[in-house]
Length: 226
Length: 226
DNA sequence: GACGAATGCGAGCAATCACTCGTAATCTCG
DNA sequence: CGAGATTACGAGTGATTGCTCGCATTCGTC
Image (tube, rainbow over all chains, first blue to last red; front, side, top):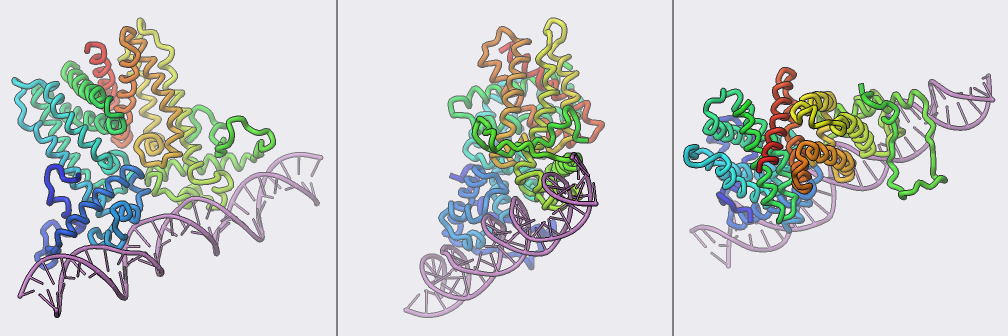
C-alpha cells in the first residue's frame, strides 16, 4: 500500500517554508537508511488511517505513532510536526490524483465523446479515493487548518485547468469565462459527491459513479444549450 | 440578527441525552430572565462567527465568550458544554433551512416548471447560508465531531425527503429507488457547491446560483432520459 | 571489530483548553 | 425593602496533547 504512481517521492518531507530559490548553504541531503524510508511509509500509512477515522484535528501524533507501531520520539525524527505529516500525505495524494487526471489532456472530441471519456476516467479516480479516504479529510471540507489546506491549492488549480481544458474541447464555442465557471462548479460538485462514493458499500459504487457522470454530462449539456 | 423564523426556540438548550420518555421528576422549566435570553442570543451569534472563522475544533469556548463580551463562567451558565452550543446553533439553522425548503411541498407541476421552482427557492437558501456561514461548518464537511454531526441527520433526512418528493412530482414515471438516488446525489452536489456560494463576492452570487440551478436541472433531465 | 551516524525509545515538559467554583452583583416579586 | 433566584465574574484546575531530550540500539563503512 501507499505506493501508487511514484514510490520514492513519499518520503520527501519538505517542511521548509523557505525562499523560492533554495540556498545551497542550508542544503541538507538528510542521509537516510532504507529502514528510515520504510518507517516513513509506515507512518504515512498509519496517518492516513487515523486521519480518515478521526479527522485532522482529533488525530493525535501519538495515535499515529502507535498505529504505526512506533514511539512518538521516532515519529518526530522524520517529521518536524503534525502539519508536516499531513503535508507529506497531501503531496502524495496530489501527485497521484494529478496523474489520474492527466488522460483528460490528450482527448480527441471527434473520436471520444465526453460521456465516454468520463466513463473510463471516473472509475480509477473513485477507486483511489475509496482506497485513500483521508484524501477527503485533507482536501475537501475545511477541517484541516489553513496552512494544511494551502497544500491543496496547487492540485485544485491544476485540476481546474484540466477540467477547463476538457470543457474547451467539447464546447469550443463557449466563452472562456463560462467554461471556467463551469469547471469551478463541476469541481465543487465533485467534492460534494465524493464522500458519498467513499462511504458507500462496494456494490453501490458503480451506480453512484454513473450518477456522478450523469451530473457532469447533464450540467455540461445545459452549459451548451443555455 | 439571529432571529429568522422563530425567535424563542433559540434558547432551548436540550442537552439531556436521557430516556425517550421524559421523567416528570427531573422536569425543570429552568426559569430565565429576559437578560438571560439576550445573553444566549449573543453567545449563539458569537459562536456562529467564531465557528465560521476557525472551524469547530479550533474554536475555544473562551473565544466564544470573549466575542460575546461575556466571561467563560457565564457561558457555562447557559450551555453545559461546547457541543451544546453547536447543537443549539445547529437546531436554529436546521429549523430555518427546513422552513426555506417547505415551499417545495406545495408545487403543482402543471403550473410551475422545476426550473421556475428552483429559480424562486434557491435565492433565499443561498442568502441564508451567506448570512450564516457557520452553517457549513456544522452541516457539511466532517469537521465537527460525531455527536455534533448527528444533529444534522434529521435535517438531512427531511431535506432528502423533500427533494425526493419534488423529483417525484416532476418525474412521476421514474422508479422510487432512482428518485431517491437522484435526491441523494443532488443533496451531495448541493453541499459541494455551497462553499463556493458562501465565499464568492456579492456580485458573483446570482451567476453562481444560476449554475447551481443548471446543475440540478441538467442532472434531472438526464435522470429522465436515461 | 570499531567508530560515527542513523534509528529508536518513552517518560515527561509546557502549553492549551474545556470546564468549575466561590463570590458578588442584579433582578423578580411580594 | 428584603428574600430568594438568576446572572455575572475570572482565576484556577484537571486532562489532553504536541513535542523534547537523554540515552540505548542498530546500521553502514572502513
